[in-house]
Image (cartoon, rainbow, N blue to C red):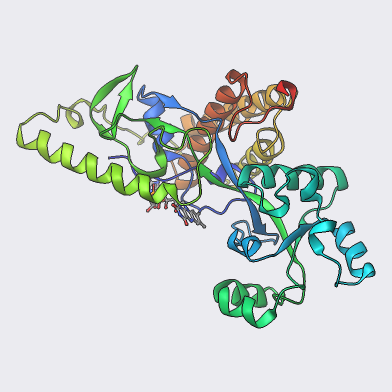
Length: 343
Ligand SMILES: Cc1cc2nc3c(=O)[nH]c(=O)nc-3n(C[C@H](O)[C@H](O)[C@H](O)COP(=O)(O)OP(=O)(O)OC[C@H]3O[C@@H](n4cnc5c(N)ncnc54)[C@H](O)[C@@H]3O)c2cc1C
């Protein structure tokens, strides 16, 4: 059963843990499984901007509570006018959605991305100064504590935020029982559950919190199906047909730095060119760059004993290729896929 989670590590900023390197998708893809909907990567709009590669997530409930998004410039104008003025009137979000800062996750994330690209600023600001500090601390104790550790006082100072890769909607195609599909038919003995699986339940744009529901429902279905088939001797042969892995003739990886550089290049390409706002030109460029990195990584793969870093990088490269291919193939803007040449 593949249950390896997502692939957020292919982006420069991600809310995902460091294990999110797309191992399950890569393994299944190499085995010939159907991989679908990889163009739909969800970005969380408001991760704390910091040097931490895994930024802290600022819940959308804070905006539900009245926090407003502003550019750095808008914030200074608002401060100059006196904070008594309704802060929502100063938010760039009104140019993107009639709901302002309460727009949906994809709209808000794309709006922030556009404003950052326009201004060149490394982040926008989530403003809470117009709200009651005590109430904020009571309602969001973990966020308040975490922000304080970063030197930011909720209700007093603006919070620097940027979008971060959050959830992989696509993945290994499964049927209603969690059985991995190959050319539309179940692959004997292989299941996928959780974020690695593409069930279709999220459509093109996951609604917050549905992934845990999906994971629980499909784990239940898959486990019942496995037990049933096991009882009937109907799980199929799998392990016996695996080729033997040999690495005795391979040398040790002498330098780790090239892998670190390749990973940084991959993450940079995926974020700049295959992130929230894509274009045909960006996708072509990303394709060339990912292919180049793939060749480099492949040289190490063929000559060195595998290390965790090498295995994960190789998998991330393959998953990135799948995202680029799927993004190039999708010729309409829907859900989390936005190509400005298709507007
Ligand atoms: C900060 C944050 C907040 C979230 N909040 C919500 C929420 O409120 N509601 C909601 O529905 N969803 C939320 N999500 C999404 C949801 O948490 C994830 O989609 C879900 O946890 C994924 O579960 P999983 O079991 O598929 O993968 P994971 O929980 O990522 O587990 C994958 C496991 O596989 C292991 N693994 C990976 N590769 C290998 C390998 N090659 N070999 C062996 N083991 C491997 C990992 O070590 C890990 O233990 C959130 C996600 C994040 C990051």
